[in-house]
Image 1 (cartoon, rainbow, N blue to C red):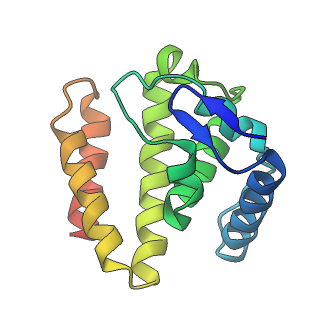
Image 2: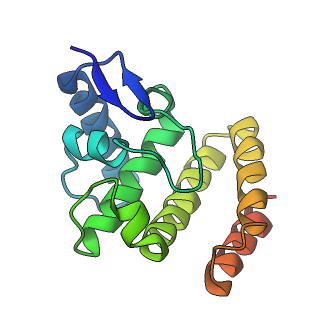
Amino acid sequence: MILMTSRGQSRINKKEIQKKINNTISFLLKNKYPVDEVQAQELIDYFSGEAPLGDTTTIDDILDSKWLLIHEIIEIAELKKMGFQISVQLLYNHPIEVSQAHLKATKYELNFASEANDSSWVKSRLVHVRSWLEATTLPNELLDQCQQILNRFS
């Protein structure tokens, strides 16, 4: 079964997606990030529409990258902790909260990648962080967080 989203389709079935999520959650728990259950359908739903800022990251991009999957699981977990039901509409209806969860996930992602000595990943992601600083849609508090991430991992 191929899972379709407007940001692409996944060549991986839902059962395999859940297995990857569960392995990532095990990694996070071992590394002292408290995460509750995240379902494959939540990840699929989160990627089921166009991103408001034109992000073209696909679900397969996420599933093919340990660091991106860690990032998305943390982002979803943080949104669930805020009481949200996971859907693509969060990106449109609660952009500040999504941005907060996104930045928290970025900190964890970069920290884990740094601990694994994956400097090429960290460098490539810092390019993204710099572009977020140029975004005029973020409030000053979140721009400050972007700058802190950049300072910490540069």
